[in-house]
Amino acid sequence: MANSNSVKVVEVCRVAPLPSSPDSITSDQSLLTLFDLLWLRFSPVEPVYFYEIPPTSNPNIFYDSILPKLKASLSLTLQPFLPLAGNLTWPQHSPKPVLSFVQGDSVSLTIAESNADNFPYLSGNDFVEAKEYHPLIPPLEVSDERAAVMAIQITFFPNRGFSIGTTLHHAVLDGKNSCSFFKAWAHICKHDTGITSSSSSISLPDNLKPFHDRNAIHDPKGLGELYSNEYLNQEGPNNRSVTHRHPPRVLPEDLVRGTFDFTRENIHTLRERVVKTTRASDNPSSLHLSTFSLGCAYTWICLVKAEEIKGENSKTAMIFGVDVRSRLDHPVPETYFGNCIAGRVAVAETKGLIGEDGLAVAVKAITEALRSLDDGVLNGAELWVSKFLDFSLYDKIYSIAGSQRFEIYGTDFGWGRPKKFELVSIDKTDAVTLMDSKHGGGAVEVGLALKKPQMEVFASLFARGL
Image (cartoon, rainbow, N blue to C red):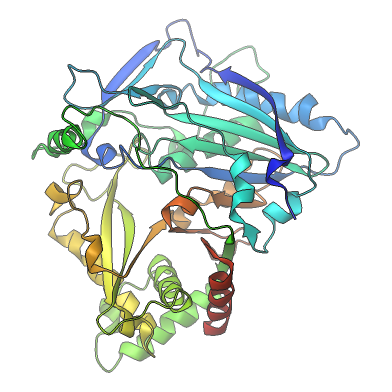
């Protein structure tokens, strides 16, 4: 069993972007876009990656080699990712919050070490007490007036490996950006790009070069101003806070985390099941039968059953995000750095989800939600901040974080693929992660946090239905 008090802080330092030349940008600022503003007062995002250290005869390899390389490559990686070293503010003269970077800004980096031999437990496949991941996540420097964008913690597990935990302000970037940053950092670290040479310039693959122009997001309806005014009036007037104000959630003592895999064969089986079920009553070719839709649908019905959501007229909803970079009237590059996610809500009656054709019911609900994109990405966006969803209409609301397209497990710093990835922040948000699987082969994995009795029921349902 792991011990939450077993992690001690060894060092807290600052890492600044290493200038690539004397003429490097020394300051930059931009207004948040309508997509950024949706996340202004949400809880931070907290991803953590676990890496094994290959067998070695050098017991000091982490402090002698791995850590210095991680620090040096981080400084280089921040060159093209300057906003991550910056801050969010909302000056009195500004109509919207401002993301700024000035010379001297840097990222807080915590170096910690675990005194417990708990790396196999934390990075394994068994249920893990949710609280055991919390010491691996660094605090983010935030106040109502100013919020840092990112903080990082590297935790060493002697003779085992290390973890890289991060706290990110969601108003600055989405999941795709976060994964791109980690992959860029890993690429520079693994390939010694600029680390050992006299030059501080770096070279990244085109798919990892961020596009930073937030002016590329067109907002003809003035939604950004609308959202900003609504925030100003929340607990206002003139509430210019740039951080979330929700009190810390008290987590149940028996909250555990679990990870469950869908193999390629599992997805094929689920797809065939939906096609067979809908053949007589509906055209299955009109349904969205992607890996993402099927994974979300199956997880949804298992959760409803495990949590025993009941009631004659009971309804549940599932919220998920859609990357709309290519769907906008004025598309932006795939490497656009900033939020570019539109939320969609699938709704279904509980009795349908727990019935014999529950999977098909869930898939149909998700398909209908996706079809709403045909009416326009920003259709109904005027209400996205003030009233995105009437929570009183549903017995339970689930949400999905992530995408298998992020290819999380391809993030190799030079010591192999991640042993495990966790999004620690779902403890507080009740979200479910959906990512590519560490086992590869087209598999995907879902991660969730539930009370232990419910998790055990979920695990049984999940395995039995496949």
